Amino acid sequence: MAITKPRNSNYLEECDLVENKDREQYLQQKPESSQKLLTVPRNEKLDEQVTNASNNQVVTEQKSNKIRRLLCLISCVILYLAEGVNVSATGPFFPNEAQKKGVTQTMIGIISAVTMFALWFMSLLLLFLASEKNKKPLFYIGLFTSAATCIIFGELVLIKNTNLFIISCVVTRFLMGIGCACIWSAGAPILIPLFPDKAGKIFGLLEFSVGFGQMIGPPFGSFLFSLGGYRLPFWVAGLLEIAAGVFCVICLSTVGNDDGEKQKDAKTDCSNKLKSSTSIAHGSMRSLNIPPRESQFSKTSLKFISNPGVILITFPVLTIMCEVGFLQVALAPHLLDTYNVDGNSSGNVFLIHAGLSAVTCALFGILVDRGFASCAFVVSTFLTAIAYFILGLPQLIAMGSSDKFSLYFGLALLGITANGGFIPGYFLFEKIAELAKIDSQTKLRIYVVTWMNSCYAIGSILGQVVVGGIFFETFNFYPSCLLLAALSSVSFLIGLVYLIFAGLLKKVYYADESKIVITSSDKCNLDVHNEIES
Image 1 (cartoon, rainbow, N blue to C red):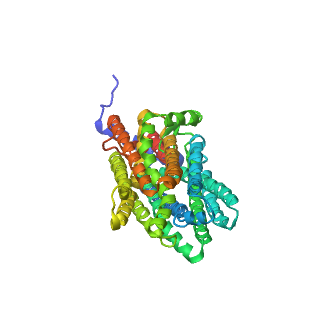
Image 2: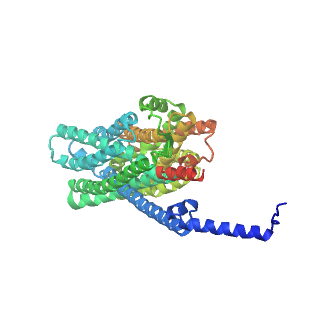
Image 3: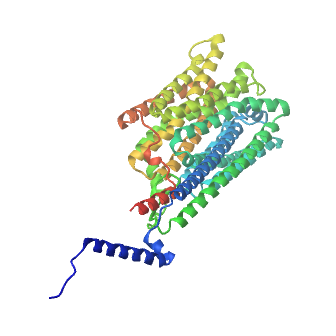
């Protein structure tokens, strides 16, 4: 019989200890690379340093972009101010000086209106041709064309022949209008994408700049006219616009180059990770694997122009814009004939209208952003009719010494309401187009700006040629004001009825969540983060 050793628990424990020691010795003899494959400790300090460095880089880039955007805004504001001076500085003395050369009042109105006709023509042309790619080149061409023609227009006074003087003035003013159209049609679409949630304030600020330039233009022109004669105001206004244009080109070129580099870097970093990117211009998502849709400006622009709402709101805008052209050609002769106020001091009277117009620009921009665009538009149209009636009141009532009071009060009221139809008009046209689903947000902005420039030009032409030229030469100043009062009353009723039936006579806001800008780099980082998490 074989003798077996009983199973001892202590013996088994000793065997386990020996086996564990052998395993530890084996692991110690393995190369370091094998041990690293077994466990990888997480370095939390290194992760924190990388995160902090990335955040600091983003903050620095945001500050740099903000500074560049502010410089672009400042440069455009200065340029628009110079453009306002350019447009209004000639009002106090050009009509009277042209009459000395044998130019009739109707022809003076035509010469002044040629600029607005060119502005209207070029704005309609840009409505079909302007795009995101060529808006900056158009802007640059316009600012230097406008400045150069301003200087040339001042030198035309050296021409002694009346007919040659008229032809030269018409050609120069036509080229000046083309330059103005390029500036005003491309300026706002360039700035709005840089400040997408402050569209109303940007429009208000640009109109304030033009209005402030028009405010200081008449007294500034009168002062320079008395100081150095007819040619000096044109040289100063032209050189001021050239200096502002150079500053503007430098700032906008910097922003454009940075945007291109960011888009290029974003596409390089995300080429293997993303299938879609974000349009920086207006925050619209577009797939990278879908070819871009060809431009359909010709069809959609005609659809925009023929929209009934756009047509009906155009009438009140035109009547409000009439005052700009009418006062430019009719006020100086009226002051000279009635009160014996010549070009050396008439700029102070122009200051009443232009000054209040400039001051109220910012107010209307704030009202638009707070949802009161429709109310501001209707009230301004109504008060414009009242202001014209007050200006024409001496025709109905013998006022005696109170004649000047009605003139100053009417000009002040027109100055307050001048931008009430212009700045909210941008908003109303865009909302009407959005409700009709005419086109994308990017193209709508171009349509709206160019159409508003066309309205400004047509209104000024009507004020300069029809009312301030033909009608003023036949019936004088007061009946012309009463005619404008009647037209403003009719257009007020048209605008009011349409806004009520369209459901727009309420608080409607400019900025919404769809206009939030998301950069391509942000989208890339978000998708990479999602891949890591998954």
